[in-house]
Length: 594
Image (cartoon, rainbow, N blue to C red; front, side, top):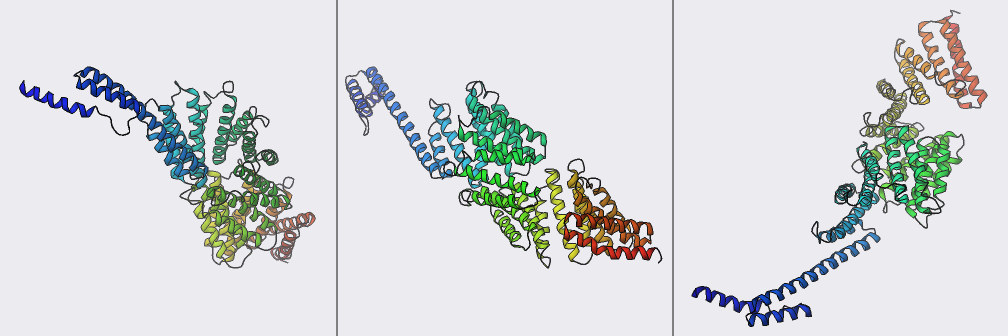
């Protein structure tokens, strides 16, 4: 007991020091500690303990205020970084703000709010600067936020988190060559609509309908599913019931822009252009420069499509203007992947113009535009867009190589198409794969006509036949017929270099397939081309077989093609078929034995 008394006495002396005020204590805490020290000296330890407990409560409150203030300061720095477009820096500040509070504390709402801001900053970094790592981080964080905001407790917040997740998934899905992320986005938007109803939150409902429409349009375009894109149009038109110009002019313009994209994909290009021009009434360069640039880019795409249908170049030249306008705001420094998107569109319209004009200036500009795009549209960052741009580059190089002597550009075109096929696979995007095979076939065919031997021509035939596995008559009858015609050309050229008649017979069969859709009533000039080409092939076949009846049929077909081209004013093609007529007449005379 004596030892214990000594121990207590020592502890009692220490208590006096423990209860003393500390530097930085506020006046209320100093007063409480002073009273506690007096209670200890008086031997009233119970009172001392109660006073120190009260001081502890005050200190905890103070620490809590300091933590809240520290988090708020991190958040304010994050907002400043967002304004300076330093998104990665902003994300770090919001991360620090959220980390101040442990999960499930009394400040859980603040913590979640900071996490939402962090996700937004990561999304902007990923979207605007092509940073896929940041975009994936945004997706993962938004998935966490869906869990942190349970539907049962906060249904509208949960729906908002689902909506934001959909936005991030679509943006990443655009860059992938598959469809997984786009399909996830559709699911997320549909989940959001379970709580974001029109009756409950009409404008939020309209926003999610717009997001859903965009995801469906992108998915439909990737899968070549008209039904998906038609669903997208329905979603956009639903959204416009609440997103009116009078009520929310900028949001209305956004939905008009997206509606234009879907209408364009459906082939309703005139309606798409109307929608884009509507959007530009509110999405002006002064108010929303990047959105204005986005619509200018989309308008350029629609004008290009319209220009391809017309014989003149007015719409194509308007498209060039629209793309160049877009580039005034979609700069490489500001939004590198969107800048590359515009460069790709510009390349496409320049090729179309170049093919209609003499010389090579526009075609050379197109090649430059595609090569510029590929500086940002790398396979690692945006595999699908990279492949699409490689395909466009291949087309531009084939067109340019067709006008230049030598084979350098054609060799480059073949290489570009083969690169594109690494991502545009038959399993992922069957029609894009088929289109790329057609382009590859055209480049190989042109190369084969320049070179000796038969290797390139045989490769071209393989490419065309591969394309026809997906580019079927049912899916795209006129496109299928064009591929059949091109296959016929390659088989004919190969047949002229080989002995026998097999390749020539296959060529005639291909031309006849083409003529099932290239009818005289539907497409007279295309009909004349395939009909005349079949005649030229039959002319050579008749000579090898010494078949007088076939020779006479061939002469008749060549003459009819000549007359059709002449009467339509197509002087170049008319001259080509006219040059074949003397030889055809001579073969008729020869095989008749005269």
